[in-house]
Image (cartoon, rainbow, N blue to C red; front, side, top):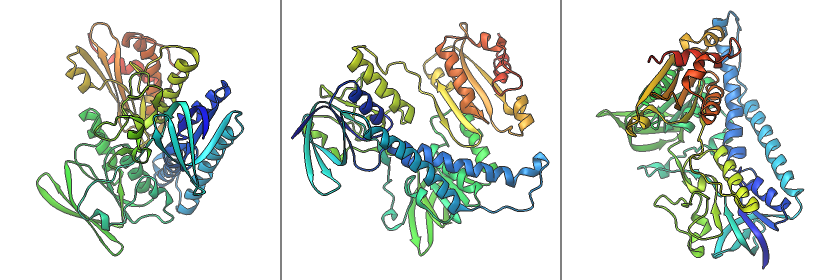
Amino acid sequence: MQKFDAIIIGAGQGGVPLAKKLAKAGWKTAIIEKRWIGGTCINDGCTPTKAMIACAEVAYTVANSRQWGITVPAYQVDFEKIVARKNEIVSSFRDGATKGLEKTDGLSIFYGTASFSGPKTIDIKLRTGNTETISAGQVFINTGASPKIPDLPGLAQVPYLTNTTVLDLQVLPSHLIVLGGSYIGLEFGQLFRRLGTQVTIIERSNLLKREDDDVSAAMKKIMEGAGITVHTGATVKQVEAHGDVVRVVLNTHGESKTITGSHLLLASGRVAQTKELHVENAGITLDEKGFIPVNDQLETSVAGIYALGDVKGGPAFTHISYNDHLILLKNLLHKEQATTSGRPVPYCVFTDPQLGRIGLTEKDAREKGLEIQVACLDMTKVARAIETGHTDGFMKAVVEKGSGKILGAAILGHNGGEIMSVLQIAMMAGMTAQQLREMIFAHPLYTESLNNLFMTITD
């Protein structure tokens, strides 16, 4: 049995840099990956979806070019080329991450499925079919999450798609039915609609249910304006397959409906990839949903075993996984006391327009009993949006009354994620709404309209 100083299970966006940096610090390190280096983000998450969304945005611009005074007689969507472009980008990113690991001294890569056989002992079922056992004083779990498959009558007989398998399609669906109205469902729904697919989104509550109602309503209006059929407050009763046709029977607002399409995409959440780990052999406890609880320094219920990224629950974003590895490095290599407590959790939904989010929602703030003021500015009043022809959405910020402290923001608009990032930096710097209202921004940027946004607050 080989002994290491550190074992990282999973080569995702937290595991890869953690393994490299521990090895470079002199730790004898092993990293285990059952699939591909790079995790969900590179292989079937951020990288491929955003590459395809970029193609769909070009299709939208060409199809609607007359509003900018440009006439395009005809255009054609080459879906095979779109997929090939996506695959090329993914391969480039994956190969770069793999080579980075391979050339790191003191780092051993094992390709296979890991499971605990003891507190800090790992059995690896290698791709070759052999099994190897290794151990270490410190173990880091970065196995991520996978698509949640809902328990729906008839689903076992339906050839459904997930966010992973939908990327393997070689032919555009004629009618894509999407179960789920959050990030994945909305991004894929709009992507395929712009490429020419008929799209229906079914959501049991509101779109983006964690957001304020006005944000959810605005997103619904944007999706419907794009020609997408949206059913909210809908409960799926049954799914059926009849040859090349998929049927979804649902109940919405007391009315029964049957939706018929060519493909069914499940976008109803994610589950932790812990089943194959057999964490019980290490004494690790799981929560009721199968995620690995950790303290604010990312340590599990077993000393010396840590979890980072999506597998630990909480915000499931690549940038959070990456920040997790920084916290671990600070504490293990530099003896700091870094924690996850109070760290900002920015995120962006890559629809068009984007939704950039940071801090508290209005609903969160009111539930906490905070005295707040809400700044709101429609994108139809943003000079840059008018000039570029992107006036969907609005800017919104939650401000503490009296102090002017910015508590949170939702920017639903073109380049919304970039504008949100400016507000994130301002929040971290302790800047007030008054300061941003008076700040000089270059004209005519989208960010300049933060002046006008905070002018909507009246004393």
